[in-house]
Length: 166
Image 1 (cartoon, rainbow, N blue to C red):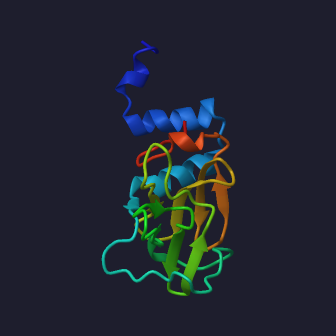
Image 2 (image 1 turned 180 degrees about the vertical axis):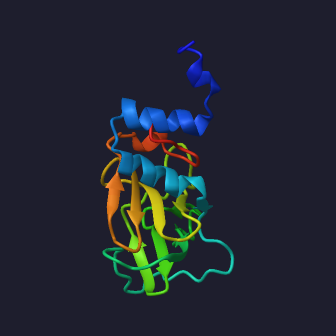
């Protein structure tokens, strides 16, 4: 009977159990992950109508900055001779009521997917992304400036739209 119990749980319920007990995340970390992804809005690169702040002096995202209005990726540079895109300078930008901020540690593309999104909670108070620096998924609280990084390391080449912490 106990062996059949997991099969009766939803995919999200099983994920919570795995994160809490197999990956040994704290209840706070699991709650933060669930709260961020439960009603999250995935943001894709550079939606139409958003003016990129390329080339401007934009500060890194640090501390308390308030709720996110939207996020976008800076455009890639295209070599006019070869018509090849150079994505090395592409990065995520986060726009709040206080201003626009760089998120250079957030992955923008991978071998698996040329367009890696970030996720913003519906209320704009949390931001989830894959951190290149940490080699893991991270969740940032926008009001308090706190950041929770998953202890589960995931190879960058495995990251794509809909990737998970495992």
